[in-house]
Length: 627
Image 1 (tube, helix red, strand yellow):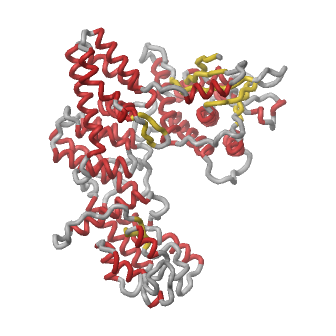
Image 2: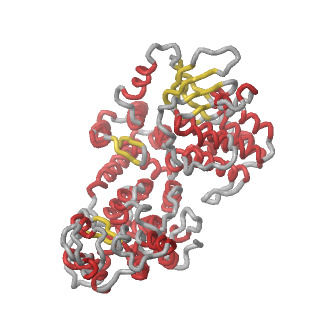
Image 3: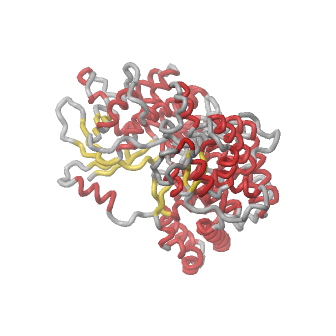
């Protein structure tokens, strides 16, 4: 078995043809988890190359490791392509080809024909014998992705196959390459370095020579599948934390530290089952200790830390801080305290600002990228006053909730949280929360702006919520609206909301059954289909009541003879009045004795939007740059 580092030039130059077996799964990588981080890494390497060319750095350009690919090479056929069957690594191999082709298009558009042709040599086998054949491509994907791949790499006419990750990936890389090569600033306003010629050269060099895969060729083995299973499924995986631990204790021995005591006081807890248990974030599963260390490093160095680079990032950060046993003791003590803080997150009281933030933002909204900011605010090392912690968390939570409900992008959250950490580093602890609120209010870019009350209340009523935003997230919002109504008067009983409430449509999604009098024309019906899923038509009820309400009409008069769902002859209004104790439902029932119409939905959408603005207060007045 051969295992060697290979650049894209090594893998694809010459008459090479990699085939992904037809039965393998479809292409599943996405922008947030894979494409955007990969592009950031490519740009980082390209910028290092430019800096080297300009004499701004003397070190060699560091390669970027993309992972491993496992394949079998078939016996060569005289004059033909060299065929390889991809056993593992199809996602990164497919992505690499899409990236090369997208950049080749962008480079060709700049007029750099020689570099564009060099990239094309890594994408296509251009010999006449392969025109119109699958062998013209360096890579041939699995069955489900072939049509989209061919259209992305060699478009012929319009695409009629609908949305496809292959096409989205190609478009993403092409647009990013065009922006970077043209010298346009990124979301943070930073301009790409160098002139247009240097940028083209740097990007091409990064792609062809400085991306590295470990290529494992299983050719000649009788049981390649057994080797593949061994590589992927056998043994206990080595965590980033294990690498870090090894380095810490070796460093401790070098500086005369009491490593035996460190093992007990600072590190023993990390070997606990809780820390090593894998949890799922997005599509990936990692141990809690590796996740914590990545967040801790992000918080400490105030920069994005990639999963694969966590060990190197830790060494770069910790080495100068561990030059004596005393300084090492201090650093490890702070690490231990922050680890204990992180472990306590799961047990935070949901009634506290930090518990509320963890429950709503990190767990329900699934924005774990905000964790480094939460960790920084709660770290004993920083000693942030409680009122500033509350103000900072409330501001970030409002930013998240408002953008989620308006269905605004979250692709820039990682870098935005890093930007917030940098701002916090510039102010005293007594001003931390105030600065977070100010900084959020100052944002004007599409990926970062904080919708003010006017923008939010204008946009929310016409946004389709149900089916586009997860029900768990809608429940959090509606529960907060209900609590806001209760807080408006001390005459309401101070009782907690029941657990397990479900989303209910006041006007049912199946409105054609009992709600179509007089019958709507197609345009009116389409408008109603949209409105029934907006926020003004959604409420909370128990699961039992939800199933009973079903598609029944609003009034008892319209429900005469109705037997489905129990409670024969009763309309939805009567059942809500009888069984729901929520104030939001009481208000609906009391204000609408005879009907619930589309105009009522729009009016309630406005009222709910107003309540949301009260719960999650918006940006500081006059501070937001623009929409």
